[in-house]
Image (cartoon, rainbow, N blue to C red):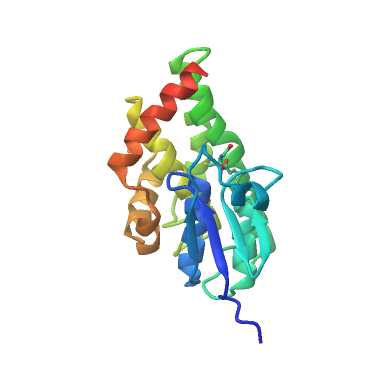
Length: 224
Ligand SMILES: N[C@@H](CCC(=O)N[C@@H](CS)C(=O)NCC(=O)O)C(=O)O
């Protein structure tokens, strides 16, 4: 029988929420892996060879099989190692977890970072637009410990790597209280719950260093 845990490598970047969520999944499943840190934006020839289509991290290599795109990788991990399921078993719940995960990456990230930093209309309008989107997630989390229910799942990894441990740090750099306890009590409770989970804590980029880097990214994005 194939030893599935053999030869798992992850190419990542320390502040990348997309890399962090894959590490969360590997840790949750207890899969040993070799982590190869990329020096973005100076991409290694290995990254360009493994992900010629997008040239981005994360890339997972499992027994010579190459996987790109974090959401695809999460599903692969879940199906390859069946312990501690990440996606819900129910087909509708599974579809909804995928729906909201796409919403985080395709709506909240661009609006809550690019649109906000550029603030072409005004910073107030950009904040309002971001909060309108976050309100959808507030409704989803209300009454639950995690999006996955009692334990962390797919959407917790996707939204958790992105919102509290990536975007919220950018908002902090900009002096914006985007997800106040008053407006978003459910999400604040969820963030506290996430912080209690050891494998999540292990994957959170160190705050001070992250904030320093985030300030540089914000400046670069503003002037781009
Ligand atoms: N949709 C991709 C996004 C990955 C992504 O944007 N990775 C960034 C790091 S946060 C990257 O590698 N950027 C390099 C580049 O854009 O050239 C995923 O889910 O994996």
